[in-house]
Length: 341
Image 1 (cartoon, rainbow, N blue to C red):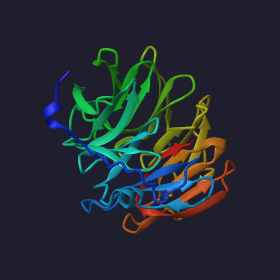
Image 2: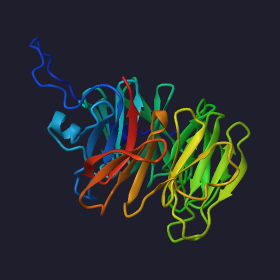
Image 3: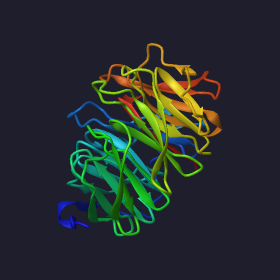
């Protein structure tokens, strides 16, 4: 395992403690809801965080900036949670912002990362993918420092953990999933799936589902591949219709029995399905559906990036596909993280 302590610095931010009661009210309510990462415009450094409350049915915008008095950075792409601690991956800034999820107060910043994209947490460690580096960065969450890296030989984006193994998708021009044993932090297998594996989800049976886009130029027909995470063999391949299909954002509900993804709207299928659904149960119409999250109770949250320049929308749909609620988030609303007190 490569040591890269010198490459990344964690900047601790210590707040003054006052005996006086806190005068400023919380900038968003506690309780059930989800965070939305608004990517902002490329190179503008105007990424923000919003919170949608399932209780008030309101969106609370620019939380990080309001609480901390500074910007979040350029292209926040992912947020991972470890109890009340959150880790916001800011891709183009090369940082990970550690925050208190109850207040959005910054607890410190990991800097110097090379194009970080996603992060998973396993047994007190954070594993971070990179679009420009062949290494997975390893963070000790108790020590609040980077303790090394795992060279997987390819760049990576989507990550998943199952059965004590880390699955890393080589999305940018690749066609493989790299498997790392997390006990030894050694690569043990490479699985060929389809071109550009874009998103992954683990179901209730511990099976890994991988959505492969087929390449941004339509080099091959997209597919969804199911992998047995015990023997690391492919069990099924479900193909889309043509090379012109553009599916994305594969995810699974909390029960682990239903998959959702974007393809001309929102489509869903049970994990027992042997074919892909023939039509979207929530058509996108004229909207630009960008990211997707399955909520408890069968609701689905979808972001609409509109024109990727102005502020986008959040759309929440009921289990039968009816629009339940909507509101304006930030510029290019993307990844969402559900929380419940």
